Length: 486
Image 1: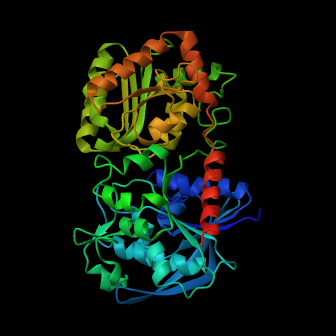
Image 2: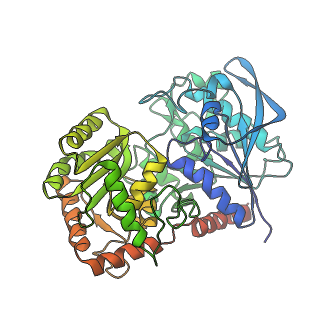
Image 3: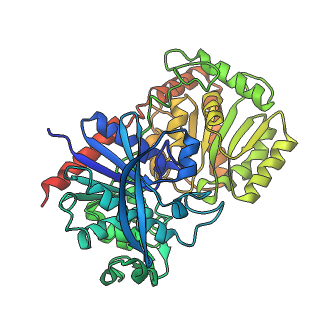
């Protein structure tokens, strides 16, 4: 079967620039698709300072695209970075993309975000049309590229290289929809006849995610359970009815990992290598982590770990409600994250009061994260909702058994001990309450105290196939279905 020409258009992608899971998907899924024999190009903004910090080399392409935006004719040079054979086309516009944050200052958003990403969308479509071959699939991601399917069918049909491309729109997190005042419609030349409730109008605002849902030929989310959840009032973020109208083109495909990168047998950031058939190194990783964090060094003491944004979505309040009692029971806690100032303060206070049992690192440090995944016994992920989640995949990859709320991708990727004792990789709880979380943790502790059972669960986690191979195949199947439908 002939390979497809696929263009990913995303607002961030690892390893060049990242704020969350979107970057992991946009950076790793294209590699998996290329391994299956397809040509993939990723187009993203040229975030000069973030890309410089990544250490990835870029080169100017000596090509640029002229684009009108908000009354200004802009000159947009193109650059390229090549990472392990994957081409990233980078759109330069320093006043818009060379900023301290990708989307805004800490805890905020830039007022001109719609200008920033509408310009990016238009230039990305022009760039896609100049790749030298007809594009089969335009794969767009989250609100920042939600307007692309609409622009393609209304304003870019005169570009023969992209005119017949099918559009796939992936929702990574429905909670972030890209809502903006309607005056931007005429300022940016957005098709105004689509500004109505059956398209991108939402409470008299522009809603970029609605535009993508309405105009794309296929909608995906990052897990099957999340695809079902967003059709309900609890998870639909006021778009459940709109999504129900478009559910005929909605599906869920679970995320994967770059398993060559996330590999405890080769990871140079951790104390000692280990794997499913050779787990002794994990004990050394735990000891090293306890020493580094000033915790009591004890092989038998359960070491609970959490790596997360500190936000309500992530259930951090459920952790805080239980942390003191877990410390009183003799457990250890190692936490890495940042976000809500109240949560940060509470975690600092607990760690300061219990220095031999708890350690809190404010911020993100990938080397430290890898050491925590490798050295922990139990990984905590009490999310209120989780479209897919990568933390639990990384934890299982490093033999750290997850305790998760049974929602979204957590439900799909972690096999609950109560449901399947033979194949279990972790423990579920259902209700988003401190009591339910505590009960699940205690169940995990009881399993931890039984070496034979725990060894089997940990081995199942280590052996779990978290690669992109299967999911990439599902995307290819979807792409071909779209191309066969005229």
